[in-house]
Image (cartoon, rainbow, N blue to C red; front, side, top):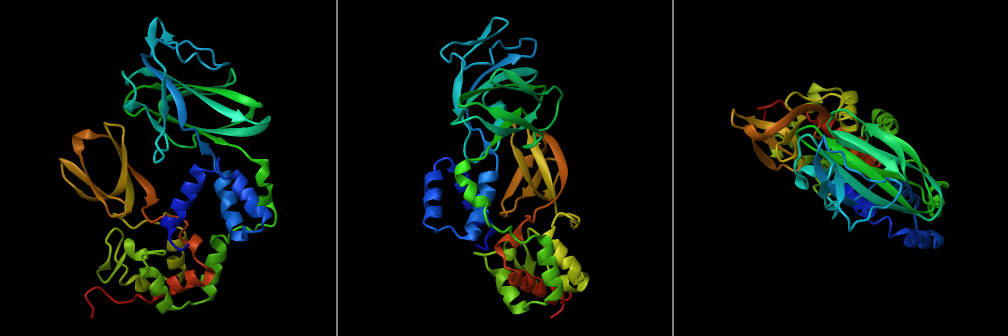
Amino acid sequence: DKSPELRDDCRRALAAIRGEIGDALVALEQRQELSATAKRELKAILAEPMLLRDWHLAGAWKKEHRPEFDPAQAPALEQKVLAAGHPRTWRQLSLAPERDRWNLLEHMKPVDGAWCVGYATIDAEREEASELQLGSDDQLTVWLNGVQVYEHRDSRGWGADQARVPVTLKAGPNHLWVLAGNDSGPWEFSVRLRREDPRFAFLNVDVADRPGPEAYREFALQKPGDPQRGRKLFEDRQGVGCIKCHAVAGQGATIGPDLLSVGTKYPREELIRSVLEPSNRILSGYQVTIVITDDGRTHQGIVKRETPEAIELVDAEGKTTSLAVDTVVEREDANVSMMPNGLKDGLTLDDFADIVGYLESLKQEAGAK
């Protein structure tokens, strides 16, 4: 579909249930009902690491009291975890579908200068090579089946892919333990698991890759495109929907800059680049600002208004959030654009050339009739 939002929603939905759709995919392939395009997208989805959402967590303890546990086996969940004689009860928790990490501030006390321990089970039908992708704020130590496979000892902000650790899963249940530490401020961690299912080997056979950015660039440089058709694509809110963020002569949204005279300001090569690589060069005032508040939540958007008391952020959906300055723990201007990457993915080469042709035709000066 041309709509990036619809494509992203479908990807997330399929990723969330990929453990349940294996037999259905195999059956579709046996009936030859999977197109090459569908195979290509499914291959990308199934290759993504899976976020481990189901955990048992216990804590928190002050840093001077390190919890006692045996990482080689499953915990006795009915028993409390001790740290220097201080007991804590196991809690079984599942991460909500919209979350991409654990925010331990929501589940633990105390939170500054503290430890938390977590346990998760990974089941495997056979021995297989895999990979853990780890992120934390702050410290994180990880054990798999009694072997320490990772340790980070310093303070840092969370990132989804701060470490990649190759591991081997054994047949049956695999015991994964984490020890998460916090110095102050946000307290987060995530564990993702990348693994391959041999049932889906057919997704690697005779499946052409999606055309890359260079293919779109070269095509649009050689073919001028149809500006009128490009305008329809630009304004289609159910499709690529450029108008949901950009206006032309005041018609449209104001999340991004008005494009009234963009064809006068920039040559065709730059218009192509701006669609393919929106974060390569960002117009001043339109970069994304990331704000972390004292409740551990992360907010991002373009700063539309700022006073000594509050910051107003506008997100990609046009929603405005006002944050009190005295609740801000961290603030960073990210070197990324609000305009998403991958807009070309729902477009044919001709679609892309038509949109560029429309942008190139926008040469009216502001205030002109």
